[in-house]
Structure formats: C-alpha cells, structure tokens
Length: 396
Image (cartoon, rainbow, N blue to C red; front, top):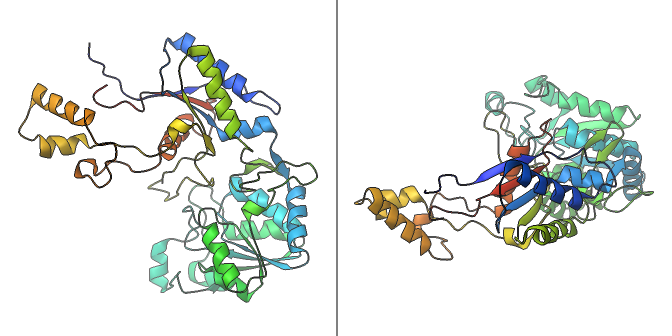
C-alpha cells in the first residue's frame, strides 16, 4: 500500500527536570519508551529536539538580580547608564532590568517606538500618522509621548510598559529618565555609557555607538557572560535568551550545549543502530499576525545541533511543476513525471524557477519553529519533540 503519512511531530512527556539531572539519559530513555508505547520504529535522519529551558534547568544555569547588579556596577561604576532598546516583556526583561537598576546610580531608559524589536507595540502605528510623528526622526520625552499618545496597555498583558519599567527602576531609589527614539546615537546626548539591550541588531547598535563617541558600550550579551560569585552564566549570550525564574532570578540560555546533542546522538545510535539528528531549540522564528509579535526573543532558534541539520532545504514546488512543466499530464502520468523530476533534481536549486515559493531558511530555524509550536510554552509537559519524515519527499 502506498504510504500516505509524511512528516510527523510528537511531543514527548518527561519527568520534571531539576538541577543536576542527566539530560542525555532522560531524553534517550524518554524516546525509547515512547517508541515502545506508541509502536514506532527509528530511522536515519529522524530528529530528537529538546527545549533549551530544561537543558538550562538541569545545568542550574541561573543568575540572581544581585549577580546582574554586581556585573553592571563593575562595568559602569558611577556612570549614568543609558539602557536602550529593551524588549517589552515581563518574562524576558523585567527581572534583568531590576538587576540593572540595582547596579546603577542613574538610568536613562530609551525605548524604541511604535514597537520594540520583536513587535510588542507601545502605540498603534496608525496613531503616529494621525499625530504627525515620524518614529525614524523624532525623539520624544516621556511627557511628549504621553501628550501625543496617552496611556496604552499591551495587547496581551494589559500592562503599560512605560510605567512598569520605570517603577522597576525607581523601586531601588534610582533616578530614571525615559526617552523614545529609534536612533542609537540619541542616547549619547544623555550619557556616553550605554547598555544596549537589543537582540538581533545588537552588533550594529554597538558599532554605531562606538563610532559616535560612546566611552563604554556593553550589550546584554556581555552581562553574566562569566560567573559572578558562583552564579550561572553564558559565555556566548550573557543575559540574552534568559527567562524569569523567580522575582529575584533569571534562567539563562543553556551553557556549552553542543556536547549534549552529540552525546544524545551517540547514545541513540548505540541503542538503535540509527543515526538520528539532535537539536536544542528555544523560540521559534515566526510572527503572530494579530498581535504583530515576532516570536524570536532568543538570540538564536537553536544553540546546538548535530551536523545533519546544517544548511537549508533544497526543494522544488510541486504545484509549479503541475501547473507549468507538466501541465499537459494528468493522473499517474503526472505523478510519475513529478516523481522523476524530484529524484533527479539538482543538488543546488538556488535561482531555479521550479523552487520558487519554497522556504530558503535554515533547517534549524524551520525545525525549531515546528518544535516550539508542538511543545508550546504552557502546561503540555512535552519538552522533547520527536520528528519523523521531515527529510522525506513525494518520492519516498
């Protein structure tokens, strides 16, 4: 009988992961038990994916606001700190901001508008047109922003982030001025010491600041990039990719994760004889069309993956073949023609018309997005995702 099912993604339940747990052992055990209970077999190029959160939990990779404060104070001393381009998130930035405030004497908080880097809006973009405000050229004080736009609560959280972030700073007795601008150079009118909090544009922001007279420039990736009094840390990303753990601490992105995926791959090979691909994933790379929020608040979708997940898809568009190359065929003849085309396709389809409309994104970004949507961020309890058939095509 002809095979009907293509790609299958299964969310797998594991025990609650705690500090010190053996992640490779738990993952491999879970995958093998799932195979027994659900009756599926393993094949080369099947994929095992683990959410970054449980990896970092097992590592105990946490940092307190005191650790953040000590790092900030050591880098900026008594300077007024320009904290620029943070995302608007209780989960992602609020606790980091508390630590930053605790380590500073004065803060100038510069917010991008109408939205942050990942699409959380401070103000509806249509209001900018109505008020005649140009976000690319106009710099607004807090009073000017309120005069134009009043108080606006976030679509999902119901929070006015301007007041909320200001309150997190002032609770430590730290003076706080707020300014609104999308130009990194604006902050240099207030201070030459800058902590840039953007994620995907941080390299450009740092370059602009340094080229225009900033004396101290650090990013969130430079805070907690080494242990502070025995705290967790991430040598590559610092506070980027962190999440709220408690009101006093954050869970950091997993540290040195590559040996973990390599070990899982080796253990499954030993147990099954098959070479599976393994990855650790965080946020998916997709955008919510209603809330306009781009999901990717982590610095990367996948901080570690096995070599078979390198690269991008090399696919042709079946509907293009059916509507163009083989428009004169029907039924079995059409199926055979398309199957033969796929079997004989070029190894690099870049620029080939038959590939237009496929997704030329990295495999890890595509698969990580699939995993993030499968496992969810709530109470599903499935931090491991097992995927089969992802690398199959119409001919398999």
